[in-house]
Length: 262
Figure 1: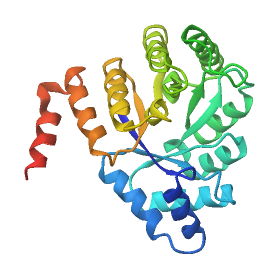
Figure 2: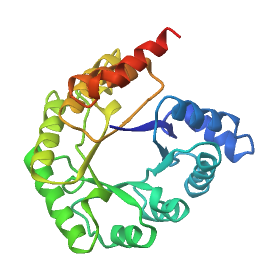
Figure 3: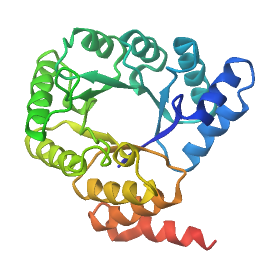
Figure 4: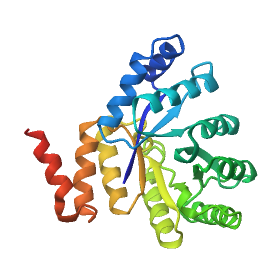
């Protein structure tokens, strides 16, 4: 399971404040967000700077700070293809651009992936809407076929299973997990989702997030965007990896629990 830290997102007030201060010359808070997420197990950091007032400038600045202060890879997060292109040029092969609609013209995405060697997240949406699981999978398969035909290996493609808020759609978790199951059985693409999306609008969100994360790990999710600093999610991650058979002889779980008492 690849953990992607979600906290460098301008839709989060504390993150927006940290980014704004960094743009004004004080990067202390931004660097702290970077380091805390890496220390908590994040291998990549999602970066969304859309609300900073200077999306391209803030994106480049935060990427440079990640490169200077951590070993994390970068996941630039924007619907703006130009922003993704600029970010991928800075990061190169280590970059995972987030994201690109599976039903769109893939030519711009192909150009980015060929030039920079980056990987990419595909959204199996239909005209901007989230369809039922079977349609999501067919959209993903069609996009994968086009990318493969153009020389892009499936290992460089992550398909978002599209977790939505249970407060709005009661079957959101079931649909996301069914999408995951179908993708795993019918494609060789990797899978990803934003764990926190599932609990928007609900109280005690970590309870829902933890239950969903555990279910997704058992269903073989490859990468999760979440808050790695939350103890509840770290607990769930290690326990679910044991249950899913991802932790040989429970070594990682035992070491994780032992560290609590050292």
